[in-house]
Length: 246
Image (cartoon, rainbow, N blue to C red; front, side, top):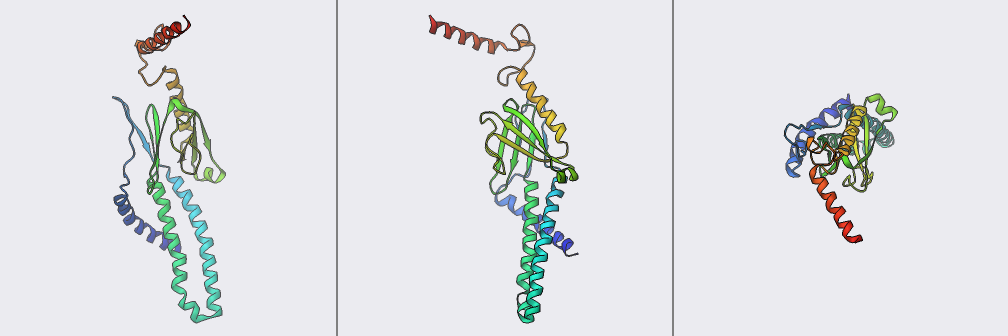
């Protein structure tokens, strides 16, 4: 009963706090965007609600342990000295309730400020409220995408994706100090399908030739997939090399 009351109080506090924080820190409420071409669409998503339930599971487990500890200490104080126990009652109540409220708020802030946006050429990851971390990873820089899922995560029905990039193309370090060449997509319910989608776009970006130029009928002939612009650059390189060896 007390846990339910704590959750209701936390939800009430959070609804008001979220509006205040987004105003103070100018936290964007909407998903980030990526450049798109005509006819292209973006896939913007938050982590799965299963990930939110998973984090609340650990929250309630830790809450139960700490609350039992503080209640036991309070009972011991009451048994030793009733007056002192009554005087310290507000302190123990604060120690039991306030950390629970703050932890609940932190869980929802983490969920509401985490976004993953996928375009045909790149993926953008955003998380954070005090410090906003936003990383864009182009598919051509991705080396590997792996699925991570522990037994408890499997029970809740979600997994994490770990995106490894080459040579610093992945941007800034992700939350959790994973490193500069790693992108973390947490709490997705369709991790295997998303991994296959990303890897298919990685293969498509590499087979399309150099850079981000359109791969269409203009470069599909004898150029082996290169556009006229690519062939012109190659001719200039060959001419420069010939002059150096002359």
